[in-house]
Amino acid sequence: MTVNELKQAFIQDFGVGYQVFGLSRLMGQIMGLLLCEEEPQSLDAITEGLCVSKGPVSQITRRLSDHRLLRKAWVPGSRRGHYVAVDDVFGQAYANSAAKQGQNHELARRYREQIAQADEEVPEYFRRRVEEMAAFYELMLEHQDAFMDAWRRRRAELAAASAAEDLS
Image (cartoon, helix red, strand yellow):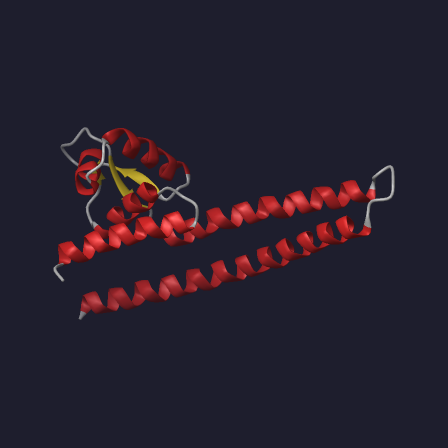
């Protein structure tokens, strides 16, 4: 398999991976393309590389930027917008997901309080399910913090190993 074929397969599979999470396939393909390229990519280069029209690519790059997964990059001599994946794109994607879990935890916390203050008796099964929801997300958030700490350490190890390789 040539490098170009390998990159094309990665881009397509990355798009499918995003679909699995209920996101846009094109969103995943854009991220896959940016991960394959060292240099910043213009909207034209992205649309050309993915064989899609510029409108959806422009909208999706804006959304990816809002989610801090890519950023604009300045390219000397060019007035066009260019994009690159952020340095810790995988950590940022995980942080985005963790934020959603935090919202679920807040929902459970809010309903736990409302059940405690209800004007009438709340059915036990509903009370129990809200308690379980709160406990689930509390535990998840605890583990997410530990995971992110471990990821930062692993990422630093990877960077150190890469720097050592570059020196040899």
